[in-house]
Image 1 (cartoon, rainbow, N blue to C red):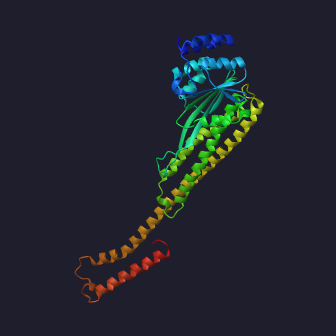
Image 2 (image 1 turned 45 degrees about the horizontal axis):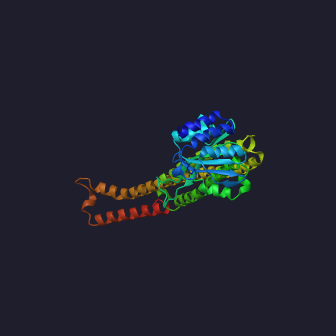
Image 3 (image 1 turned 30 degrees about the vertical axis):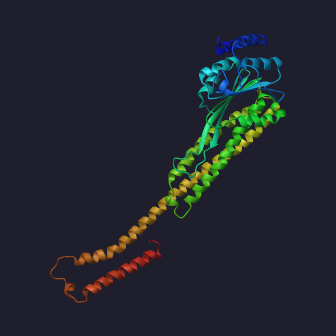
Length: 375
């Protein structure tokens, strides 16, 4: 019988004895190390599978069914299973083993979800949008500044399942940090959920701090002497990337409020205080994003105003030069008429006098326009 077939039976087995029956069937296959995704029977999407008891990491010996059986039998500890972009087939056995709701499983596999927290029986399902800052030498109208991904978390009484989408947001360093604090890790799956939320929100703050440099550079360029020549596409690109960040940050307020205030079976009251701290950090990120949005709007309006002023200055210069050129054009037009009787045509000093009048008139106009700032 296949692994998936064995795992499906777990949904109808609520006792440890039932788990033993599935475990005996699973033992017919060779043993594997679930901590190494390349050797995992559940597919290459499995990043890691770790068991914790009293905040200490316990080596995994056997397959996933054996691991879950051991944890539920001892009633002291939990399993942390990490996945990266699993397929429906790869997630099917895991969903049956941990009795996960089909709607939550569908969201975890398909991704592209808004940040949210949902309760399905005794299991809590949370969605977080992850972000990272994309380094670039120079900001252009097509530069990618913010890259987003997702982390889905299934938290139960004795398990945590993390499903990550995207090329960033690895939870390996976070796992090591938690393992260095056994007292916090001993608080169970709720402590892992808090650590993930805190990690995600800290990334929001890091990204906003990095975007501050890009905004400062654009602002400096706009208010420089040649600010009217700044490519407005750079400003629009920053606004688009800021909107991408905003879509990840703002919707998380409601889920964090639920985690920090409403009674939830999986989360102990002492952990809810930690979620309130994360909520405060999220508020800071939201305020920075709102300030950046207003600042970019002001920068864009200032740039458009500078473009308008520059165009007006160009039009004034063109008008002034047209007025200066109009004087010789008018005089030459008069003397270009083909009449036989024009008294000035046969005057010896007529040509020098006319040229002098034209030069003086043009000089007077030029000086007047320069004095008034038109030239």
